[in-house]
Each structure stands twice: as C-alpha cells, then as structure tokens.
Length: 218
Ligand SMILES: Cc1cc2nc3c(=O)[nH]c(=O)nc-3n(C[C@H](O)[C@H](O)[C@H](O)COP(=O)(O)O)c2cc1C
Image 1 (cartoon, rainbow, N blue to C red):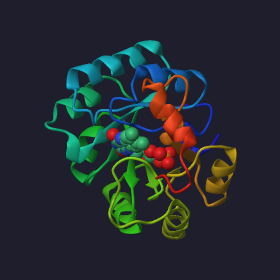
Image 2: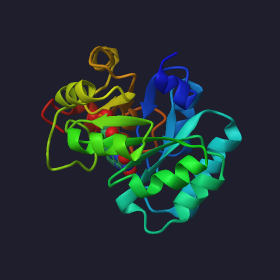
Image 3: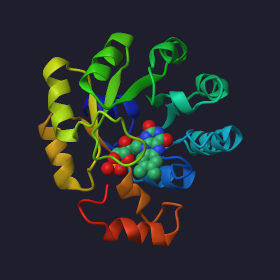
Image 4: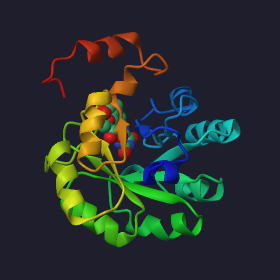
C-alpha cells in the first residue's frame, strides 16, 4: 500500500486519465473493475451528462475519481455537485486550484492537481493539495507552452517536496511505470494508452492511428 493507493482506494497504482468525452463510465468502470482508478471527465462541459456518468460510477460502488479542469468550467455547478455527491477523489487541472481547495476539503475530498512545471507544483503544495499529477510535455491533450519532460519534472519536484506524485505523459506499459517509480512516483496516469483500449468509446480508426503512430507522433 502506498500513499496514492491509500488516497484513491484503488488496488493498483494505475490511473486512467480524464479526457473530454472519452473518460466516461464505459472506460472508467472497466479500469476500476480491473483494480486501477477510473476518472470521469468534466472538460466536455456537458454538465448533465457528466453528472449522469458520475452517478453510474457512484452506483457501481467502485473507487473512482472526477477531474475538474478549472479554466474550462463555465460555472460552479460541477464543483457544487462534486462536493455534495459523496465523491472521495478529485483531480484538478488547467488553472490554480487555490479557490477550489476550501470547498473540496470541507467536503472531505482528496485533491491532486495536475502540474506542468516545478513552480506550479510548489504553489499547489502551498495551496494545500494532497498530491500532484506530474504531467510532462510528452502527454496528450492540452499542454503548457513551457515544455518540461516527465523525466525531468518528476526529479525536479521530488527534489523539492515529498508530496505524493502521479507520473503522467508518455507512459504506456510496465517499463514506463517502473521508470516513473524509480523517480519517486507512487502511481502513473495514462491517457493515450487508454484511448486505444478496447473499452474506450472512440472510433476504431482513432485507436489504430495511435497504435500506428511514430515515436514523434505526440
Ligand atoms: C484526448 C485527451 C483529452 C484530455 N483531456 C484532459 C482533461 O479533460 N483534463 C485533464 O486534466 N487532462 C486531460 N488530458 C491529459 C491527460 O489527463 C493525461 O495527463 C495525459 O494524456 C497523459 O499523457 P499520455 O497521453 O502520454 O498518457 C487529455 C489527454 C488526451 C489524450
């Protein structure tokens, strides 16, 4: 048992990344059922649909998380819903988590924030987050223009703080996971790898394009 497993309730330290429209209950429940941690997205902005997906996960009794991408939330409806619905684990991303911390912590929720740089990581530690998703520039999705690789970022953050770290960006298998753990991570978060999985809801052509992509394809 490590700190991320204690925080999430998952059996294995493998987190399925939040991804707009893709990270819904079909994928998240398969990951959580297999012992990892499924995460439900809210970046699609489809408040009612995301709430329905979260309710499916709550009804399943499986451990899971919800992502709140701060800059992309059009109002406070999703934050309120998350605080009131009995969710135990939230990742925040895309913005400062500072103003979200008080309501989330008051609701007894464990909060990890996704960080692309050392500076942001240290600000988040000061803001009182419970852990960090350390997201290198290899990762898929919207990225910070200040590019720092997963390998460099994990080492830089571990040098300055002992906070639990989830490594994200460019990890697809056990070798990448072992490397992340050697650098101090206690879990990995994978996005692209899960987009290409059988349980992912995207078209098969998208999955095949990922499998066929070159190492320069990010
Ligand atoms: C299609 C796609 C959509 C994403 N959407 C989100 C999102 O809504 N919120 C978020 O915090 N991260 C988002 N991300 C980033 C992932 O959470 C994750 O950190 C990243 O995919 C890890 O890198 P990898 O794709 O190399 O595994 C997205 C990534 C992808 C590929």
